Length: 346
Image (tube, one colour):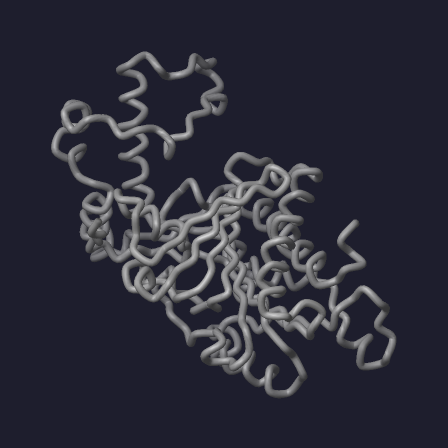
């Protein structure tokens, strides 16, 4: 089956978003597997060279940990998510015989801008041990771990890649784990997803601010990337909203909308992404010609309208402070549990 690729230049760092663009779920060279760890769903995508060209994603493994159905502010739930992060990371390290080897954790981003502070927040919670190993004081069950937060070029004047390369050339490390905030093309994914990949990262690519790639190709050692989508652009929000409005009207038209207290709209629990598309006749009935546009065509239209005026803003959630703080701790302790055997039971 031929893959139909759209013309919309997707602003996203998520492989899951790129795969979801296709009405046909059959993509040449892509293998999808679903894993369940303590009731946390993980979607694994194996991207080959054929799928890489279609999806505009590097060849490698992409794991998407879905948090949409979980309250990660709850301690017991967050512990399960930490274990999922640890599981995925451990699988990747095992496949390359890197478990127990020397790691460098790099927290990308600007600590002064909350949606971009995931990397620095994670580094703040990493259990670093290299100084103990240097002094021959490292206990059994702990790996040699270093961590840096290099800041951003706007405040340091130095390309992030150059700082990481300088550290990589100075100290003895076997692999790098890069952590960063990402951009998504879906409002349903913002602060609801953790992506882990073995392909490295190109900082800022999701928001059109590309920096030099940090990967095996450039660093000469394995580079793993962990990211949380914290922003989405206005064109995608508008398109998502139109799509959800059509689906809501479709449910209401068929008397399928759950009855809720009108004073508490937050109680309405509809998983819009899992609702079947209404017919074109109904779409046109609800929203006229706009309703007949595909999501890709909608995004193209909204981008054309918003971008020339500088209105295609990057947007985040109103409770981003709490979301980033808690998600960063989850990622940090997922890394800690993976790299330090003695912390696994904690």
